[in-house]
Image 1 (cartoon, rainbow over the protein chains, first blue to last red):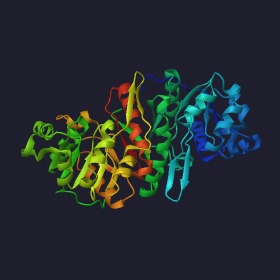
Image 2 (cartoon, rainbow over the protein chains, first blue to last red):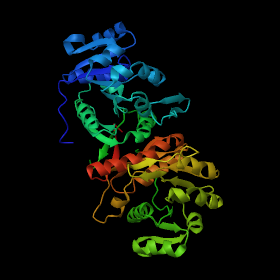
Image 3 (tube, rainbow over the protein chains, first blue to last red):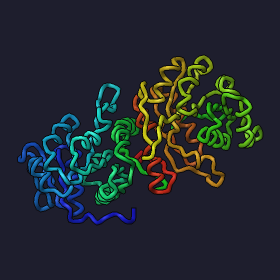
Image 4 (cartoon, each protein chain N blue to C red):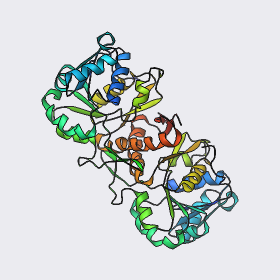
Length: 223
Length: 223
């Protein structure tokens, strides 16, 4: 992990940035000194979320999803699973040529808790890859706790972010991006075809959090 | 994890105990003072594996799979995925009433590395549950490195073993069993329906091991 690229100066876009996960990531990247663009279907809702986090003074602004995609150097997909396919289909040209980071966890909930939903393409990340044929798709940030990301009392987060993909330059860059969050390491986690179990493991973390009243994350040992 | 039951004195059977994973677990449980029975299709091969690890002097003996299942208090399934279904179908009555711990990872390998195989029942553990209707099936020990388990230079293993199941008494007992291995914690990891991603994550660990030249495991943070 010593030879990761310099990512300072990159503008980071977050589609679905008005949700807790997206807003939490936006907050942490802005804290690290990045320009962050929150994307949403409605530009005013996006700007509202950016303002909640401190707005332009903190490096944050809000735009509609298409403008967010166009104006960002790297784009994180943090939309709800229900809107994943349609959102990406609508942004194919805006996302062409860019590194797109999918952090969506396809999950269902019933009285027994959370469980992984089947995905025809194998995983949300592989669905993104199938739609965004001109983009460089990476999967990462599945296990970060939105609660911790948003908590002003939490300075550092004790977590390894698993970064999956088939494009070494892109996964290296996203590993470096993960490390912008204080306490976090970005660790290569395998090819995109092995993304399903990383997405699905979020259901296990939810069970673990219930049992132990925790905000559990994972660390890789011996790495 | 403070209220886990006392498991000292339990005789542990390991079906498929002549493979590296099974032999490694046998070695560590024997080191912790347990009586361990290695099971195999052929009793003489099982006894050979037990002798390699020190035999009766170390608390280890070998029997055929059926006798191993009958004489053990708790039985770990460590057979290759290819033999999983047939082995369990043949041992339904011997395993009735017992806690059965499945640690099998259904995986394929090609030139791109390891990947998770689809399982009709959802996971190896759920296949075991479907076959062993009279047993108490728990999933655990998926991510332990056979290399580390077998290495006499390795005193403690830096790993959380995720323990999954729907029977609280059984998962508590298997958590306590995991903690018999020096360095290891047994952590509840969710219901059996969320076992697939834990089994499949072994493919990611193989990718991580290749990239970082490591024997990676996981630790849960904030637990």
